[in-house]
Image (tube, each protein chain N blue to C red):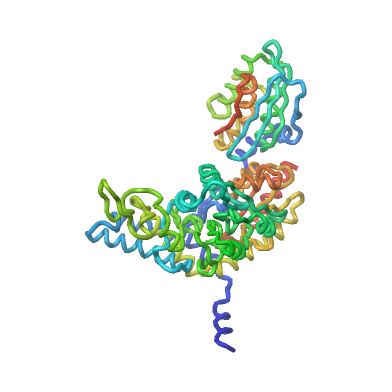
Length: 419
Length: 151
């Protein structure tokens, strides 16, 4: 056996003991309407392991102080913990250096940052920005705003009935006027994994930078920004088992260097006089004001938790859940899955006859089952399918086959009532 | 079914959801309005024919959950034949009912069949579903030239 074969054997994903993982998440012991919580709204936000909760608490109970400026002991401990989290994220997405990792409040702010700095500086009248039809509103509106401001044009890559990008259409709409492309790595309402490497390759052949909205990808797929060769990548902490209110923007160093600052304030400067201000070096140039220190440290802990379990192992477990759920849900009469791409993460959107998703959501709630109902902040996707809303079950590393059975049982009960 | 859930989804509501009354576009309408719930993306059209201060006819169209559809359907049957002022009073009482500000005893109010919506008050997120049709109707009644939204 060659060494390569041995390595591939060792690194092969394995099924883990899901009950052991569940015991790390205190909220999973909760009861809702007297029933055990079945949390299937992970695409909205994931639950937090005890290590993350404890870490954020530990910051406030034993480290609380402001970072980067203090000479006292607490400030140094907090600064170290904060910067250590940055290194963990750098390693997690395999960026070249920690100065390419900027902390934001979430994916939304990360995207707005790029729109308001890089694009405001580089997009001119008549230029074009490309996004896809399956974007979350947070990857539509910032581009509409900057395009309106600059009299630029926003172009849309259409999707097919399965919920996949039509690549030939992308090839068709890209022109010498296209100056920026921002696409979602994984769709939050359809679960589709987009062919982002191909998109980036074609964009780069035309010298166009690409931002990946990886909010729904980081918790499901191993991410290597060097291999992807994306120019920017945005994600949120709370979708990857970390705290809310914290997110990351990765950017290639040369691009970040060339960009004007986003917000002005403390920490983003090296020298201020009333005549002139010199901006701080990267990544601090983009981190004005006291950041969400507990959030950053908590996110670092979440990254550790995910890394210890192994993102490949998580993906394997989630694939098992998605395959099982897709199979059993198809047996429900009148149910139609929305989003049937070949490459999918564990997101299952569906419509059930003419029963409105909000009624489904309320009924399932009384079974202890939490799912998402509505347009999922992707109204153009709903328009594409000619529906006002869907019900969406999304599975995470701690969900079980039994929980899917409870979901299915709940759906059957609803049909009895509305039938 | 859980008692609280049964209170919300009463048979009358399920029935009106399945076969909504006055569910059509009105050709000879005198006024209309569009209501929108940004939370769920639901859109509702309400059509009125008002003559001599009286709602001679009322109909609706649109998409929505059982609560919103049944609410619109029952509203159309209640409002028909009422004066503008009477419709306003019913609107106010109905709103008080679903937000828990009105006594549950149906003898104490003039809402009649609309009392089936009393269960909504236990579900604050669904208040907007039940009230969308009413807000839209009122906008049509007052010929307000703007889209009604629940947000």
